[in-house]
Image (cartoon, rainbow, N blue to C red):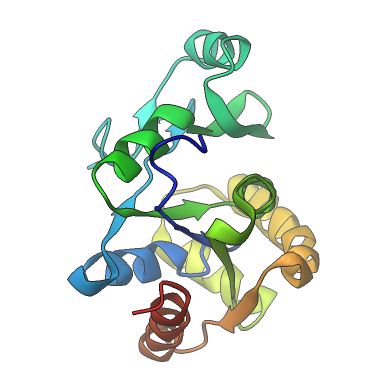
Length: 194
């Protein structure tokens, strides 16, 4: 990965589920001066309504995912929940860098730490923190995409993930989406030396 495409940089957005990182990622992608392209992750989770294979995620079967692990096709991967895998394909990063763009990652916390280690100084890792676990619970219920059991799982995972925030380059508390978007934008702009 350090071959001919080594001019590209990476911006890694991490957050517990429901913290607003996807909204912030979409905001950054609308800023042409940042020259960012979204890194589409691979996953074995079921497709949600409106999601498109190859745009939102590369949706794989568990067998396909495990085959790619064996072939060393991932920069990082993990089993986030039992039987549900997520990972970053090496081919995806090469494709983006070959196009002369910077990579934008929207990943969970452990994935973010792995990517930070892999890319080193070529990456800026930003942790998006919800104002509180209580607020996070409200946002997940409002989203209406999961049952109470899944929400409980996500909240337990989020509480653990918040402890990892110290491993990131910077922390942005999302208590006001517009303010958080501007804050993240300034960090990214500075990092990309624009």
